[in-house]
Image (cartoon, rainbow, N blue to C red):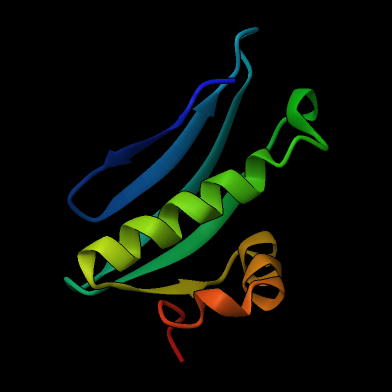
Length: 95
């Protein structure tokens, strides 16, 4: 399995995980000013189900937010569920 890549635009971006067989998982986000992102969508194809790929995408967003001093608003149901499971991410969760 390859690593998570970040594609960052001026107002939107995404985290991408590419599998060896061409499958692509992604988590998209929108920027709110210079200090927040909104995770708005996560899509993991069946080829990755049960492998923790969706979690890897959210973990990378959390790590990047910490490194950049940003907070996250998890609007995507999957990302929101992961934030509920991981209290240790509370430092980057927008309250």
